[in-house]
Image (cartoon, one colour):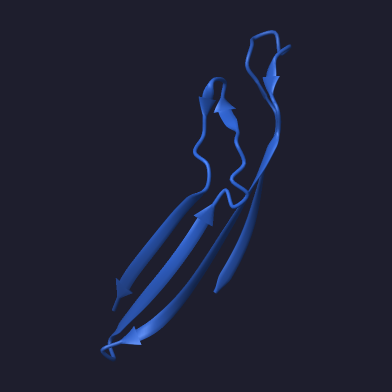
Length: 79
């Protein structure tokens, strides 16, 4: 499977009078996975995911930058 995900985050006010805010941002994530039958009674799922594909620099809280592009690899074994 292949999944493309887009997340929109609206601006966030940072003061009680709502005069200062962080700008909106959009993150794009993508994942791909493949499942295999394993030893006739198990299923193995391999998955690779990239979060923040564009390596966009953003803040969810003022003065706390978030991580850039991140990679995840997963293995799941089920009966």
